[in-house]
Length: 136
Image (cartoon, rainbow, N blue to C red; front, side, top):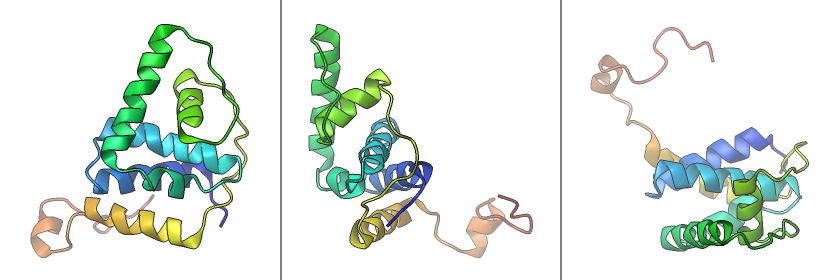
């Protein structure tokens, strides 16, 4: 399936938040998934295959590597390489995200559902939903 990089980033971010990962880490991993998908691999599947503890560990290792000043390799589509490239702002092809399997996309959408407010009269009265003006 073919998506915009923003669609991949935001959907994966919501999916990871829905799985209980903190917003900041979820945002980094959403960007990493989009970066990997821009190279034609299924970045959503690669990120979602890791549990939250593994994602935190990878972030901690990347921070330590950056702090050490070691030379960084931005080539490759593995998670650690893509994470380092993201954290250092390495350039990448920003055309479209490809290589995403339907199952991966659906898994991300299913997890993202956990972040939505349940539909009810009470939630609408409290401000949830678009109301009568849905202009986005």
